[in-house]
Image (tube, rainbow, N blue to C red; front, top):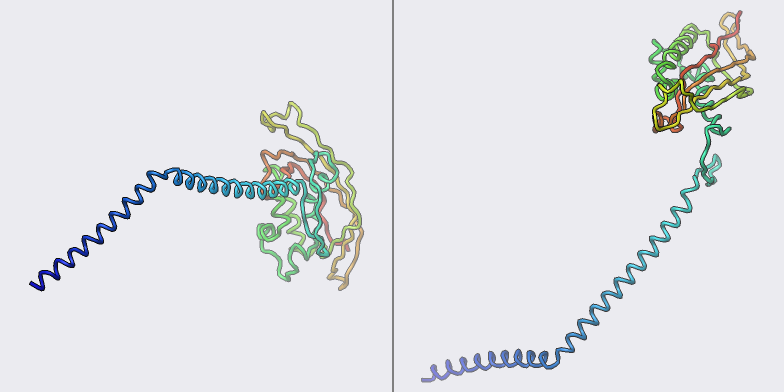
Length: 275
């Protein structure tokens, strides 16, 4: 009988706990039914807080974005570079016409620089000369860039003859070891739109320009004369004539930023003084 009373007591306790849980739930349901406006107010406040927070975050993002855009726009029109002494310099960019003197000088320099190299620059001072012309072109950045990136097929044929002559002079120890430019003058540089009879070169829908240039140099060579066993200096006059096309749509790339190519070129081959 004692065990039965103990069992009944445990069961009563369980019923009492369950009843209390149900009672609490009913009270909460009753409270929210009678006071549902509190839930609405709480949710409204929460939503308002979320909206305000989002708007504040969006405003901060927009301010930072506007600031970044302003910075980008302010600097797009400038180019920055570091000078030889380490000073940071900015320069304002502007559209450049093909008749601009600065642009002409850039084109002239790209075309003429390969032929102003000293013999020791071409061979890197090696005692043993190149075995073939292709090696000389491949290992000389100035020669290779002019031939590969800045010349039409017509000009490449002419350049091969010029390079071949330079290679022959170097192989026979007849090319000056050192070349110094004492003065340079652009005698003429004319740029004009291509005429109707040149339409085979200019495609419809874009403008193609043709240029002709004549550049003169006064140079001083220093050559080792084996027969005299001494160095000899010589002052020479070098004139380079060239013509070609300016067509950025057709030619411009990372190796040819201006978008031009020479089509013809003529120049004398430098040699050591005649003995």
